[in-house]
Length: 312
Image 1 (cartoon, rainbow, N blue to C red):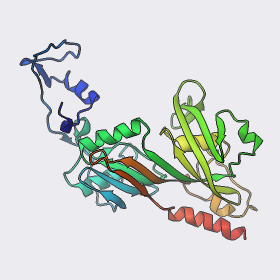
Image 2: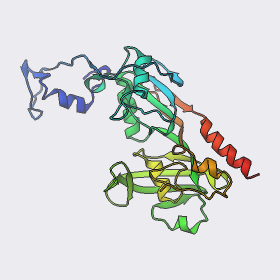
Image 3: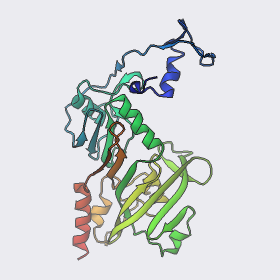
Image 4: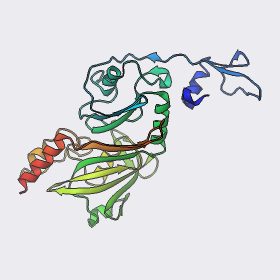
């Protein structure tokens, strides 16, 4: 296929049984049919169909945009894609309004090219494809882990390489002052909404954590993803004994004593304290190296500011 068509192997595989492929003028629906040199193969690709999701005039914090992609800074509380329980008010609804008719048609549906997601209550940077060629190029970079992704998080305690408890945990190692967490991750056996740490089976996951600064009973840390698994940072930090502030799923509803400086702000933080702070990648069309940063959100700054004020 011409590169400009940007048809993936999975998309082509669906077109064959759908009757969209003919060999020497005869429609073929069996993917196992043999072809020979000189055969003429015709592929009919229909225009992408419109999706049911409705455009909504929701403001977007746009960091970059061209004809192939857009980079946005998503606020906490916004779902990326419509789902049961969140049919509207999502990033996709906002993008449909912003794009008008210029959308990726990947998979046969005319839709914004969502190639990665961050959780509803995680803030920060997302890149979205506007063209098929950008969609496939970005997806390939996520698949081979060549994307540069760093998150800021506020965790309970301060990860310290001299901590014998931490050094004794399976999957934990240190590269200088950087904490490296290496495990397998898979869906939890009894709670399908959670991920679980494994050391056999599951999917390989690596997170590197660097302490930026300690703030009394918590620390601001930078987490760099080598892989990008569901809830990876949250479950890895919980495994290390440094769950994220506000993380009800992996923090075990962890609270600090009322006598602890900043306890009200820490115990009352309304979301997991996780922010996608930077994203770097190669533009899939122009091949330019791009890197974007989103500063600490206001609620992070308020949390850390209150702790600092009470520790003076």
